[in-house]
Amino acid sequence: MNHLSRILSFLLLVSVTLLLSNCGGDDDPEKSEEEVQLDKLKAAQWTLISASDGTDRTAEYPGMTLSFVGTFSTGGTYSYTSSATDWPSTSPWQKDGTWKFVSGSVTNKIIRLSDDVEMTYTLSNSDKQLSLAFNYTGTGFNNGKVAVVEGDWVFTFTRP
Image (spheres, helix red, strand yellow):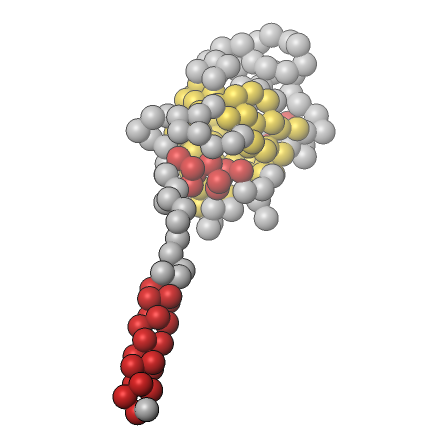
C-alpha cells in the first residue's frame, strides 16, 4: 500500500507541474511600435495648452480639443478631429482629417494626408502631454477664408 501511495503522489505531482507549466502563457503577439504609439495617441481627448508660431497664438483657439481615432493596421491611415469654441480666420490647423505614421519614424513623426504636412510629435509627462511641431506654408484653413499662414508652429496638448 505504501508503494501505491508513493506512485499516486508522484503522478499527482507530475500532473500539477504539467498543468501549471501550461497556464499563464500570453498567446497575444507583442504589439508593434506603431500600435503602441497609436494607443498612446488615442488614449484620451487632448486639450490645447499652447499654440505658437513664434508668437503665442493660444487665445486664438479657445477650448480646443483633439481626438485621434482609428483601428490599428500596419501602415494604416487614421483620423483626427478637433474642435474649439472659436477659430482664427486662417490657421495652419485643419479641424479634422486623416494622417499616418511616417515609415521609419513611427515614434516621432506623422503626416497629415490632406496637405502632406509632416509633423514631429513628442509625448512627455508619462504620455500625458503631446506636442506637434511642423512648418507650414500655404493657404490657411477654417472659416472659408483664404490667406497665407507661414511659419514653424507648435501645438501642445494635455490629457488626463
